[in-house]
Each structure stands twice: as C-alpha cells, then as structure tokens.
Length: 140
Image (cartoon, rainbow, N blue to C red):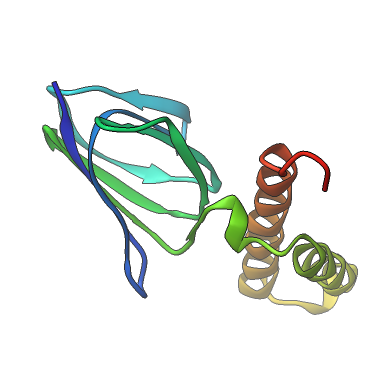
C-alpha cells in the first residue's frame, strides 16, 4: 500500500511522492505514519523527516515548524523549512548559531517576542547542523 505525501514550504512544493511510510518530528516526539492512518492535524517541530518512496530508498531532510494533515492515504506537510543535506552549508549554519547566541546574551533588553524569535531560529540552526553532520558524505 502507499500514500500520497507532499511537503510544501512558502517557496515551493519540496516533495510530492507516493510513499510507504513517513516519520516526522511532531510536537510530542517522532511520529510514524502508514497508510490508512487515523485522520488528524498536528503541529510540526524542527527535526528530521524520513520517508520511503514506493520506488526508491528511504530519504530524509531537516524540516522546521509547521503542521501536518493526515487524511486516509494523504499526508500534507506545510513547513517553513525543508532541506536535504546537500542544501546545508555547515559553515554558514555555524556562523548563524554564533550570531544568534551573541544576540541572546542581551535577553534582558529584548521583548519576549524577540527572544522567542531568536530562540526558534537558534533551534532550527542547531537542527540543520546536526542533520548535516549526521548525513555528511564520508571523507568530508
């Protein structure tokens, strides 16, 4: 059996495939989805997304925040970030983490909204760096 799986960001449809399964980083932890899953909508946290296309090997990418709608054999993920390992520049991510950490040192001068925005950005950058390092090509 298979499911229709789509990952959509504000810029593009990143994935559109028939898949056997999806493992996603839900707000309560990793969640597995197989065909005929109970209908639901849940929030998405930054983390690793894994899915198995019907006609290929398992694939993975790092995703940001968003939501997932599951309805019978259709899984729709809407997220602000979806990148595979080849799209992540490790040195740029490390630099962004350093900058975010510096900004957060001045928390007492920031509004709660600014703090939340920088903390969310830092979380995403750390997830991207960890994902890139986990999926690094041997010899690099």
